[in-house]
Length: 374
Image 1: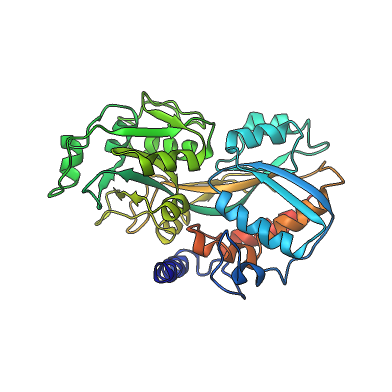
Image 2: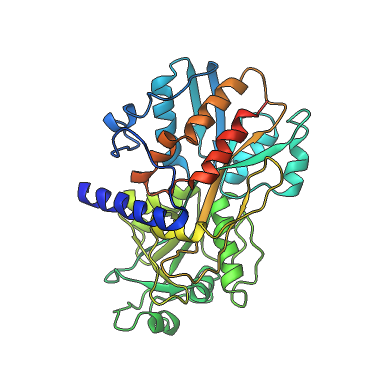
């Protein structure tokens, strides 16, 4: 496991250099940061500037849960007067709760919609909600097929699997992509998220962009595909894949890594199928374009990239907060915590968890914007 972790960190660093010149990697402390804590987590608390006190409530993206666990642990270790309670309820539920004024910020794997920004003005007195990118990473396609450990899929085949048009693992379309593989005569058990999910939104944006003829549904946080089975959260669908023969689903890479779930490679039109790794996701995310206005830092991802080694099913997780009109009792701690998350130490804590840290120029913009929250 230690060797695998070192290899994963090394791969991320190489990919990061190719993407943006330099990613916001840790400047100090151990690389051995994990959700269980230890010396790595403790070493990253020295540069945290604590502000405010009391309880900070937040909820949303389950894809960022493993990162949030480490961020909260490290921050709480330095800031004893602040208790941060983050609930991984899913992006849709997190945004809804934030727009109801119940949380200080929300985590979402897709940017706010215009109608959500409009609604946020009721909560953000004198301002509105903005998107602050905090991490990136691949959405892995995890599967459980006995005897198959090097599966290749493409967008069209994946769309048909998740829309119940391909229902057996020895289907000719899958066989064509995997010559020589011993595909079993086994029913496909496709699992999707039961909750409104930014991960679902990003997956379906990829399917719609890369296989429009096969995926007729509009991208959305709510699952629109035909058939399949549902489970709640990234932990729910990954658990189903782990325990169900013939299963396939989608979830953030860290869930595949922690549960030792095999993931599919994607035939994107590049010379070789692309594996779901943080370095390969970073190559795809590097093609993202600014989509927000003013202090909103939303990004538009390129789901149809054919660049060598670029894994196109990616997400960027945003922390959503008011630019103005934050509650006085939670504003100092919110700014302090989000500043840490976007810092070199906060981003460096992502390495061993299967996430892609923000490119330096984006992290700089996030930190600058956080200082202006009021």
